Amino acid sequence: MPGKINAKKIKQDFPILSIKMNGKPLVYLDSAATSQKPRQVIDAITDYYLTYNANIHRGIYEISEKATETYIESKRKLADFINAKEMEEIIYVRNTTEAINLVALSWAEQNLKRGDVVLVTEMEHHSNIVPWQLLSRRKHTKLEYIKLDASHNFIDMDDFKEKLETKNPRLVAVTHASNVLGTINDVREISRLSHRVGAKVLVDGAQSAPHMKVDVSNIDCDFFAFSGHKMLAPTGIGALYAKRDILENTEPMLGGGDMIKDVSFQSAIWNDLPWKFEAGTSNIEGGIGFGAAVDYLNKLGMQNIRSHEKSLTRYALEEISKVKGVSVYGPGPNKIEKRGGVISFSVKGIHPHDIASIFNSEGIAIRAGHHCAIPLVRGVLNEPALARMSFYVYNNNEDIDKAIAAIRKAQRIFRVA
Image 1 (cartoon, rainbow, N blue to C red):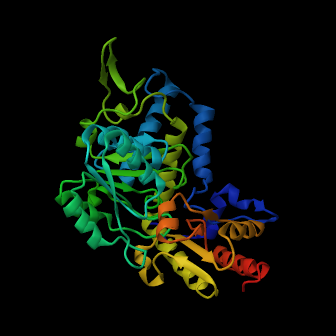
Image 2 (spheres, rainbow, N blue to C red):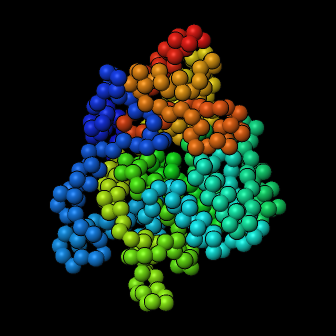
Image 3 (cartoon, one colour):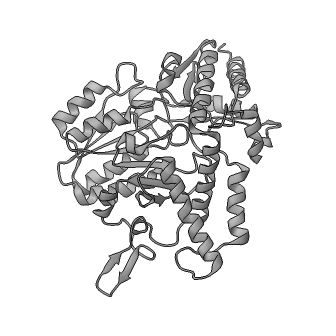
């Protein structure tokens, strides 16, 4: 297995990290929103366009066959990456959001009826709330929420178990790792308990797949959704994993070219998996870039990436705790095993947007706002917005030191130190 992560060396693989922002070297601390792309991924995409740009599945000529094989190989890599049983269980979509919507508009649309319950948590991203709200309007299903515990850091498992028994949900949809709190949920246990009452389980893996070893067979979830752009791949490519028997018994969401075997004026026969769910010309460059990103992550080793981020997060939590007037959300350093590399925070007397603006002046990119989780941020945490820094393989303690210095600068400017 590859050795310890050397972020300083890794930075050299990312061309954008050599630029300056506001005259200062870029410090990128917004990987929870989207990751930067290594040269290896950029080169793979460039090579496709320069040497074998052609449509897939349709051409009986050399460059089309190469494009097809490279695209299919990326799915095999992805299936291995998350330990799916076979490539046919991997559906390419645009992103996590589309993956969840695909489940809502296909499987749930066809299998849920009036009064059926979809159970989600209070820490979900809008992508795992709004599709179920829309489903409830169309199908008159019910959307119920699992509460967080008193610390507002973890799912209240007692409330979850009670709702499993009293609400009898048909689907439990839960984030693997919160993009606001950083909390890593025990999705394996959630799947086990949900299956006992006959519920299917969808896991939002947008914040987990890039940062830790994911094993969907061990989790035993029915659906797993994740995005390429958060794990070094291009934007516009993501994946939905679903168990084969579910996919075989679910009608496709979109119809058109490539997802059919035969068509008459009155009917059509669907293509084999996974192509049944991928209508029209695919995002070929995205799939190729996704495969290259998986190669890069595998070379580093997912266990090494997770270890690196735990170390960074622990250091950041310890350093930020030394700054008076700063509140941090999510599990503390004593719960680092249950936390990802995301730190949402507020500074007394300073709006998060002002914090982000001052960070920007120091060449540091962070997020500020509700992070597409308004029910959590405003409804549970009772905050109008939060600042957020998030880490990845190219970050080190020096980046965190610069972020802490930027917080202190903001306090001086607003005279709240």
